[in-house]
Amino acid sequence: MRNPVLVIVVAQLFGTSLWFSANSAADDLVRAWGLVPADIGTLTNAVQLGFILGTMSFAVSGLADRFAASRIFAVCAVLGAACNAAFALFADGMGAAMPLRFAVGFCLAGVYPLGMKLVVSWVPERAGAALAQLVGMLTLGTALPHGIRLAGAGWSWQATILVSSVLALLAAAMIAWLGDGPHLKRRHGAPPLRLGRVFFAFSIRDFRASALGYFGHQWELYAFWTLTPALIILSGLAEAGSARLSGLAFAVIGIGALGCLGGGWWSQRIGSARVAATALACSALCCALFPLVGDWPLWAKMSLLLLWGATVVADSPHFSALSARACPPEIVGSALAFQNSIGFAITMLSIQLGTAWIAAWGTSIAWLLLPGPLLGLLGLSPLWRAGR
Image 1 (cartoon, one colour):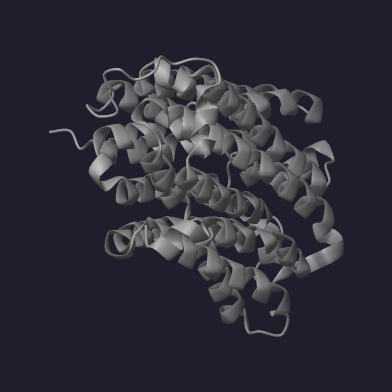
Image 2 (cartoon, helix red, strand yellow; image 1 turned 90 degrees about the vertical axis):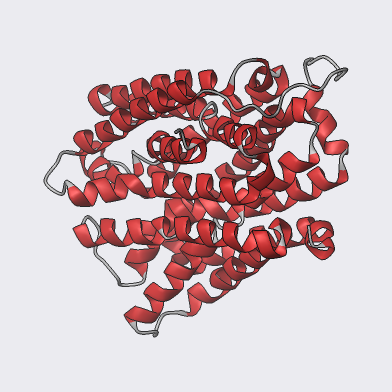
């Protein structure tokens, strides 16, 4: 018998490995193309921009709710795999790389938010815990290229990136086989889908509070993931280009999957809003402490990074669960895509500033990320105070 949540979360793991596939080859790209660290941030932001415009297109047009989520997911995963493979095989510099990474991001707009909609369509009664599994797989998918790089230490950077394309094709096949769940059917008498209908969601107080919490969370999350290898190097835990660096980066990012799973379990006892607030507070504490670790022993520095990696993403599925719960079912896909679009637009600024300033700021770059979780706590306060 099919286990729909298991199928969706594994497909999410495979599909989202496209996201940071280029970052796993950052050292090789710097050497081969004569790049500087800020260029890696620019490549990451090309993916982010593609994702932003893709999710905005799905949301404002209503396409995320006009067609089967499984069909959109499968088509976008195949197209993303093709664009990622083209980057590995044909790109020879930033000029060719930028449009291909942008295209990967645009395709991911049909993978990540539509994966969330698929979960809600199958198990709406336990959306918080199930979405925690989904975002846990997104986190592992983000870390996966570093793991592939570690496992294939003798491979070329092109081969490492091509593995992500193969995994995305498997994701497409899995979701096409599964199909959509029986829930999230349009209500009888619901208003027809129309251009811009999604903006209605922001008139709903609970959706607005969840979205504001998510926006603060996004300022920190993707910048942290982008900067993780540099933070490990600055901490003296590994040298640039070493297998140890790939292994530690995989651990720091990948442990977020455990944070998501633990938060999903806990949310069934205290509610999604309080789990999200706790994670925001913990990651804010890590941001504040990291620049002060200069004389700490290596084990303590690594422990702090692991705690940061576990908590920085543990809140993410709960923003999606809270937002989906607040919306009418006929606009859930569009509302989640729109929330993602704004959140990822915010990530572009923190990524660009973080990668541009880290050489001058050193470990103090963590303080650049600190306003995100603090403002997120403030925006989310109507929900966590009410115990939602």
